[in-house]
Length: 552
Ligand code: GLC
Ligand code: CA
Image (cartoon, rainbow, N blue to C red; front, top):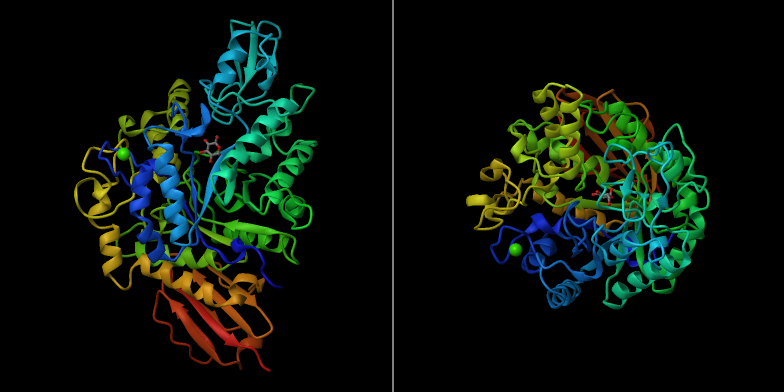
């Protein structure tokens, strides 16, 4: 297969602007801060960045509540700063992907202000309004952030629907005028020169139009039949403008992957699925982690779902909504942290798809381990904590749940050095830094040649120079120890074997018989690998990448 679009060979990097780098010392990351760090990103070797929302916003959900889609939030800088940033990225050959929130706005958006003031406003129908029932909410639909999804508005004596926080009213995509407005917003940013969009909460655009009670709110708000009409319209717009798109497509089963991302008539170029970081089959704040076999199964299941050019996956283990991957999949103990960071990296990065790195992941950053409620910042964590207390759950237990899975973990400032506040700012940051910046930071990572950073850098270079790792077929190795994940990437010329021990116990591995006679080279390892008689041992969290030359 020949790869024709720029993103098909690319490696992405997600930036959470508020936590990336503060250039003007007000404790908040900003656009000029990002610009100053472009050489660092270039050094890592990434090809594009995804910027979490930087539009004007009251910041209830850190920018995912947008009050003005055509302006930059003053805390991040000005439109001129943005223009300079995008130009600077392009000068370095790095593309820019913006986060686009189409499902909801902020309640401070001018449309909503007018919509709630009067039912006869032309903007009223931009949102979803219903009369109450039996002195209560219109139906049993819930918010993903807890509680009913309906909020009463006394001015019109109606309720409006919000899938997320009450300050994030959902847009009514049934209204063609609203759809046109959102298309215009997209065009506005395309004209500014952006190269792509990450489509926030995109499975939710369509709501069940009967507005009846449902056993599970997902049935009325996620992947509802008819959504394809809105998505196809949007796809046409991106295609006309040659724009790359990656959708946040949670809870769509792998069997439906092709419908969403098949290159001929899918709704977007690639999707993020969330099965390996679950939250589907368990409550999002529960303590449980996945077993190695569950991780192996969900990752490989998705790989198989997009086989035979059925579409492309965005590959990731972290983002701004998830705990740090070392804390979740790996081992934070000082003597295991680096090895487990590298094992996790090899586990997902060389699968078929477009790998994304979340800021700080390339340093091996870990969860914050908050010990006091005052450290909570995230709207969803605070909401959850309060609800637990109302249910008479022990405060310590409630706190330890949000400490483990809460979204603040990924949002602590990037650790640039061992200076105060991790070198992120000279002023106290908006969110307390993780104290381990003394041991984990960019400055050190760049000087140690065995660092997590160097491992990512090497992995990126290897992927970039070897087309088999970009477009070769994926195959799971089925015969492995329980604590091992092994897979191949295959082309006519070569076979790459990736073997990862995802545990605190050593593991034995035997080279599969069909590869045993081939010449091989160990391309990358986080461990000393001695292959003896086709067997080798991986230390705990050991991981290796071996290239075999296929027979002529
Ligand atoms: C997505 C974002 C998350 C945000 C939500 C509502 O899931 O990743 O951060 O809270 O959408 O916009
Ligand atoms: Ca700042």
